Image (spheres, rainbow, N blue to C red):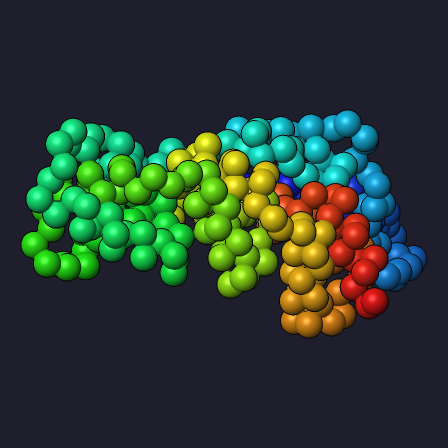
Length: 244
């Protein structure tokens, strides 16, 4: 992912250097006065409001260094097709189909998995002599709402580490989680997650690692494209409540 460093400070620095060089005199009697090197520093709000750029096919607001925060607009990178979508389940109940359904439900109670994820676990477990048809039939006949399963998985991932909506979306649809893009979008929109609190947890983690970081630097890090990418509102709330 490319960085969004602006070239304006570099141009300004180059101009200062050229000016310093041109002031040197050729006179042997008069030597040029030695002065400290000038340092170019860009003001905090140099980028005009409304300025945009395109990063990974998405519009980025250069003034705030953020992308769209609506999960319905999150793009999904190309991912390998799911095996369970390419191979339809048999219509007739296979020999071990119902037995495998019961096993799969017990597994889901412990760790919510996508249909693809559950298929892979059962396939690799080597339990009994289950055939591919047995497993395909079972994962397609669990009678569960996969959107709600994705919500449960989202909450489980958040317990391991705080993720922003965008980060969590990318985890859910990517391998090995392998939820569909629609299921991932549904989860980050509907899972019972307090995103302000999640941003605060991440801010505390960063501040502990880098105590010298200012509130402004911490805010900029939290919203940074390619970084955590919390929304400006979530990042602002986190910084404001950091010491409370």
